Length: 110
Image (cartoon, rainbow, N blue to C red; front, side):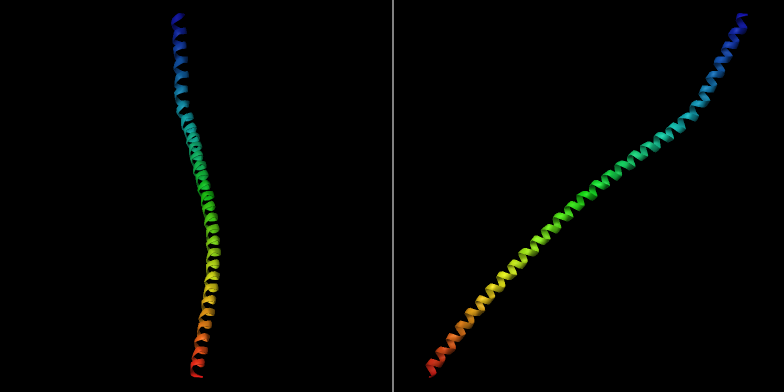
């Protein structure tokens, strides 16, 4: 009796092991696919986060540049105003010199 029980036991072990081996490859591709898709999603999420950080950084730089442009425009307006004032002063001074010259000529002629 011992031999038939041993044979049945070995047969059961063989059946269980073969079932285990057949099912294992079926489970692994699903797990691998799930794991792969999770990794792909994580990579995609990281890429999106990096892109978002880059965009935020570029927006900050653009804001700084806009502020710099405004500042330079104000400085330009101030310089133009100073130049106009200087030109008006020079023009006034030249007019005064011209009038003085004309008056002197009239005095010498007269």
